[in-house]
Length: 64
Image (cartoon, rainbow, N blue to C red; front, top):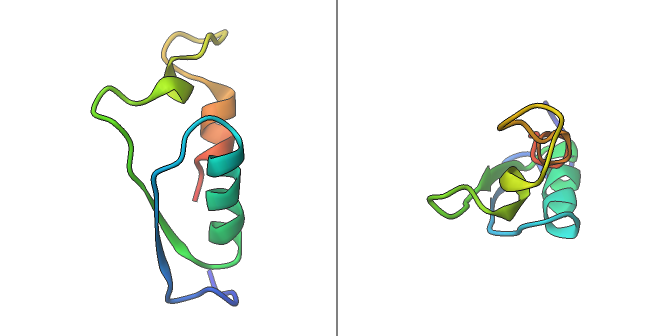
């Protein structure tokens, strides 16, 4: 996937909504975004969801 940020690697240490959204935006522009999170997965993964262990908001904001 090309884009103006192709060839740039971003280490993303963010959590909850605003930070991961920025990581998604950078990935959409071609950056290679590497998510770094706590060993236990961080609070976004543990939010209540219809499917046990799967949080749609987490997956939507942490793609790319």
